[in-house]
Image 1 (tube, rainbow, N blue to C red):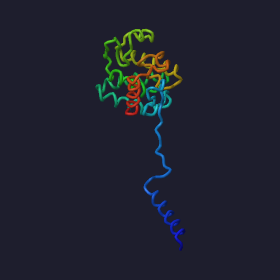
Image 2: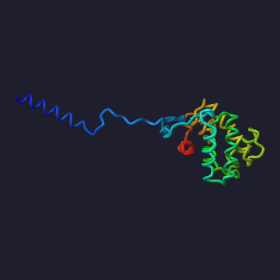
Image 3: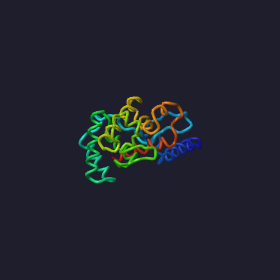
Image 4: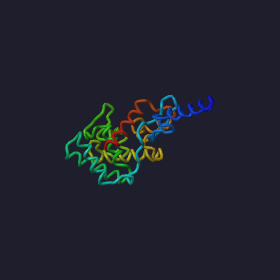
Amino acid sequence: MDATSAIVILIFVISIFSGFGHNQGYKPPSLPTTTLPTTGVINPEVTVAEPPAHYLAVEPVSAQNDIISYIKKYRSSELAVSIAGSIMKHASVYDVNPKLVAALMARESKFNPRALSSSGAMGLGQLLPSTAKNLGVEDGFDIDQNTMGTVRYFKSLLDRFKGRVSAALASYLVGPNAVARDGSISEHTRSYVEDILKIYYQI
């Protein structure tokens, strides 16, 4: 064997062994993400998958049981059953994913029907008095009325943003007009959306 042949064989052997342990050509699967409006200054990626917006996308009985179990982390069993029942009823009427409603309420009030913010936002979904009035809610601290208003308002936001859950959730916090404007999504709003989506996947 001449020197040239030996060099060629040596290079071939080295190239084979150098590929071991490197998973050449393999790329880990990427998780689905959702995007909020932004000017590009802030990274727009939400790091959890966007859930389905609609009620028909979930199985009602298992959803209700899951919601009850989650609410019981914060409230009594009796209250958990009452809140979950109201969520399921109004989610069905407005065709909204009930687990999304539960996640939203968890972030807003931790399922406290008597919650009251410094700005006057009331109850489970923290409805402002003006918003509650426009939605037909007479008593913002009533579980069923507040749930109806929360679901109805969230449904209107989903419709406005063509089922984009992330945009609807951001709008629930800062208003739909703010979300519709480029560059209006702050880090705080983005964290709020991420919190709710993460809660959704825990329910």
